[in-house]
Length: 117
Image (cartoon, rainbow, N blue to C red):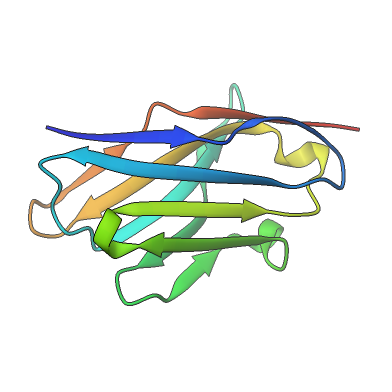
């Protein structure tokens, strides 16, 4: 049983920063990718940033230059540093991890990020 637990969300004013963290617990495999997605109520869940086990990362165009993703392979954790936040970043953020060994994705329970104008 693998569980992903997110932390660090909350309410921040526009222009502020937040740091999200996600840690995996249980019988944790080696994750090929770890990342963050976000979802606004009534809309699809969109990729924000993902990082590969080798360290390379992809970002959504809307967050490039503002968000930085990092991971600690030994601890099976991933972080998202979010700077210069704006109200359009308001969403529920989900941690995601993919195990190539098991051929499946894992999701966290989601954490709310609210940016006030």
